[in-house]
Image 1 (cartoon, rainbow, N blue to C red):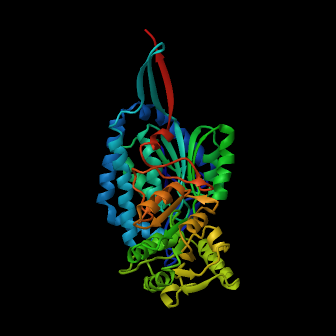
Image 2 (image 1 turned 135 degrees about the horizontal axis):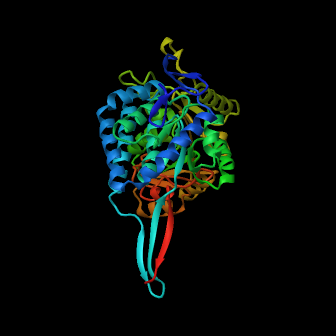
Image 3 (image 1 turned 135 degrees about the vertical axis):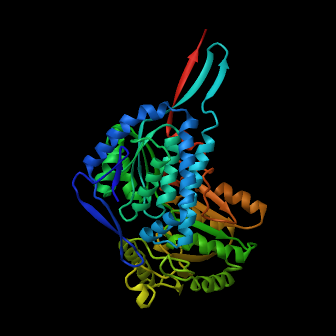
Length: 476
């Protein structure tokens, strides 16, 4: 696989490549060019040359290309999902859902493009006022490995629909699906240079995207410290930023909750994609009146999750994507064990057996009775580990839920209208779910508060993030 610049598939200027391995088997999935700063500059030049013509197209003409691409993505779903599972590790059914999610996003912005943008008013004493929306120019996107197709869709959907061109950097451990999706967009009619994909390390490719003054906006999804560096690099050029920097989402289970439904919500919300989701359930607070029963039933359910190669039938959870992530998860569990911070009632180790030795596997792990000051609660654990604590009621649950430097998502499980009203009002998060968790349709703005970042993706307002306003006053 080669990088995409100006509609052409190229090697990196250095001529170097890097391997992409299957995290379940260690097998080689493919190779990609090891891009550098010069490759980013070349991509920026191509995006600059393509910008005027792309911005001049009508929104409907731009959106038709997104629609045609979405249809082709759906047609190739099986092959795309298999590639995604091979390089990222998630079970094939999750990969199928993610590829469909990418198509959903393109279709959403196709439909949204038919709605006129801008404002109009007659202002007495001033004349006719219009507010036009204009594309920013060249935009940059830096995406992670955990949900590469979905997050690519979030970033390119609004940017391209608004008339911008883009330089995109996928993650080193999962670039192949992004390259294939970019290829499909080109086949659907996207002009050369509108979307350029440069593969390579964050310290060179990502940093050049962040600091190059020709790029007017950067959208980044990833770790907090890396996001801070992106902001520092972008600051001299006064770039617009969207930073989605992870979270430590709380889930509150009230005394009147449907226990069975809440348990299934935990299983999907925490162990989907091996727990490698920014909005995964990472802290579980259960009303003390039902806590014992809840933990007992949840333990049995977690122990029944089948771990293995995502391509195998019946697998409920695949491996972690990379060795550094596996080592961090194992380290935090070992630290909690050594400090006697709760009881590990499920998992807590790598699975045994020959079929697991070459992969990056860790069992789905449940830790009950965790003290509130444990690192399991205070830090984002990006993997299949869930700490549980009993709470005395809603007051304590909300206090603990908000006691975090993160504020990405949160959920409450109850049928009490008063509790729902209070929780949705007081939970300090960018998105709050009631009796569900994790789902983010493209129609809903997505982003966080506090340390979880700035800006929003998805929804109609995402077009605002990728455009600037020009006010015009006309007096005849």
